[in-house]
Length: 570
Image (cartoon, rainbow, N blue to C red; front, top):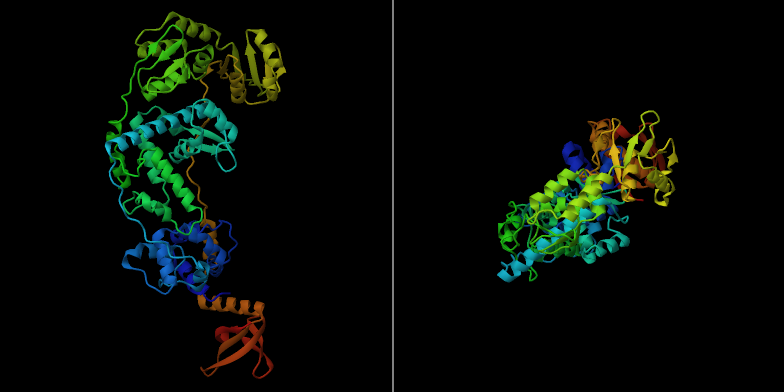
């Protein structure tokens, strides 16, 4: 056992449960670590591998303070917070010194270079305008990504990135393939999407975000970006340090510079950094830890409109950026063909059927279009809505109360026969039953499979009432942290009142295992002490056995009489 573990073990035993949980989480301790007592915990935390895994997480100030302390120097007063963090991480002793295992683990890691504290200059009108345009484009692209994901979860690689096939399909629909990973990261940080079973799903907050104004959308994305920055980039006022210092924010993390570059790109895409590195006016409140203020940004954005032109060729034209809430609803009824300040949309039987699946009715569609149209509803469009709504619902999907199986029914037996032989529906294992089809697959899954195969399906409950279909929404997932309460309770249960005796036992056990030579101080009956040099050979029954090299005899000493034991040599 390393003698350096004793001070740390004492500190761990005196720490509160909250302090221990914070330390274990920060050092990546497994919740099921097989530690018996605080001595085990101290040894594990001082293990070279454990220390090496902790060093990359240190910020610039923490790394600089640790390097100088390890080199025998003293941190300056400005590093008080860094020193406190190093103590909290058990990388410094309670007295502020570095234990030899920490010094050894540092090796030849250099001290980080001086931090760049240069505040970026204000953007010119031209640079700010370009940054605002980029922010507007990013918000619109994230919205498009969410609209597509809410319809069909996107496949992810094991690392969480979109796979190549998904990127190709999204690029075909007008999204920038080279920026999709960045857009996904921005949306994920804001809690708008979440990965589950290697599929990307939208969350419930995403539905509210999609219906917010462009300014509100940007504010949520930018605030989430700021709040999600690694602690090395955060300033004391909960903003962020100058972007010129980001590369050295975690100097001992070999992968950090690549991550810092990605975060700078996210800031650029959100319009928080201009192309020339300057800072637009709307960035300052966020950088200083205040609430987002998009008013300066909005002045550079085109005005939103709330009316469109409906045309006889079943298309619609928006004369400017359509208000987000209207755009989201219109895109459930019509497919958007082009995205610009003047966007175009096209109505088709499939798009109208899609709206009906989402809970719209003929009356609600007509009412909505009349409300936002500057030209009324052309007759061809009105006829398309009526015809599609009449056909919708020919196929009804429900659950048979007696058997628990999913039942598919229709007044049109041609549709039943078509579904029975449709190769796209083979995974459902449909079985004919009294002019209907049944399957063991769940009702909702069957319903969406039929809808994706373009059958006019309607979901109904056990009473025959139509249910509006909703899918692919996932709850936002908070980052999970291991629960160390059981581990801490186990350590406390072995926390005895006589720490010195427990420590001595462990030292003697380690010496016997290593066949070490000990200098043992023994208390004599008259109150005096005597030093013996023993080659430890055994420990049991409360007695230490060893060969006295000076007298060349085997001695057995009561452990209770041993005042101290120091290793001389193995």
